[in-house]
Length: 427
Image (cartoon, rainbow, N blue to C red; front, side, top):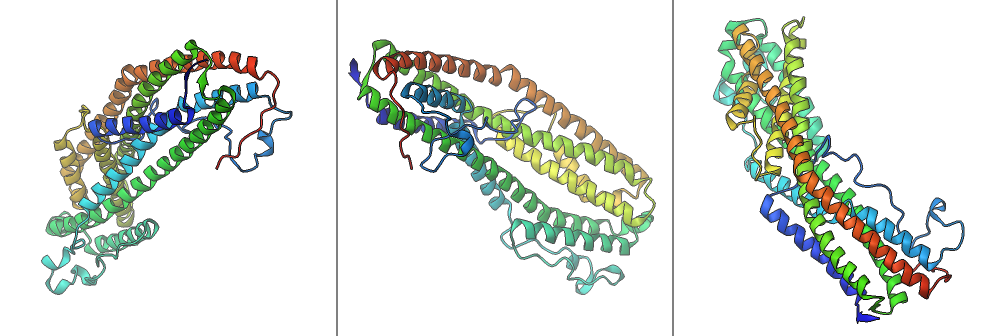
């Protein structure tokens, strides 16, 4: 026996060290993100049986008594598999991302509520063609589902207003009402943006909760393994080799954890960028269908769907860029995004004019192609740099963990070869 070892202290230091290390990553690179064709992970890690004080499901109860040697092997393999997904650093990144989204949403929310544009253009707040002036009354702030329903109802009213204005097949009326309709679009888009940001926050919270569950599982496994090792070793290492391997593994885990936090950032950014690309592809399809449409109602519906989808893509794109603030994503410029936003504001009147319709079509098409190129670039960049670094660090940590496991199994087997393992009650 050499050098006494405080197992519980080392466990606490390991967990705290990862949290602190990950905070350093967040402060230097910004926020986290969702992502990947390669960056994407439908599930954060394979399902892993965990030790709790509650009864285990029948499928997880061993068919026969488990020895201490077998219990240590099982626990260490489960820990190794779960550690490989770096739930702690990813959780820190995901929680920081939620906070950034909330801060951004609060800073973008008007303090006095959205303004009704009608009164500036029509006397006494009455809309043309007898549409009452209170149809776009500022909404009371509400939960996400109520906000979505409120926006849906408002879009129905906007559609009715545009039909009454009779601008779909009349270029003169469209030009006459251009600024009025643009004001309607700005107001609707301001409210819609709030809904899109709420959706992003809800999605980010779900991701954080999934990672929280994984991290809690890992902590419980650490605690159960610690109980076992304390009972076997009585506070000392079994050999100098074991002590050296344990120290090397701690360093390797730290390297992998730091990279894991960065991978989560790219994951978030990649997911948002792909969502923007998918939305913009749909926008181009909607826009192509507008010209052959047979009725004013159908034309307006397609136009509003195109506007809403494209607006959502813009919001997702802005979030993706905020997720990787130190990475300059090519093919996308602020000027392009401004041009697309301008097109959305004037979309309902521009679609009536053949020349403007074609120009808007070109704007959507070029922007969609550029965002698709940016998605491809992001994945290539990830695969050729960060992914390789992370895989290398993960392999190094996994090999060290396996070597240390075999070293400890020899010692545990020599001390307690046939002793039956009694699972501790861990709260």
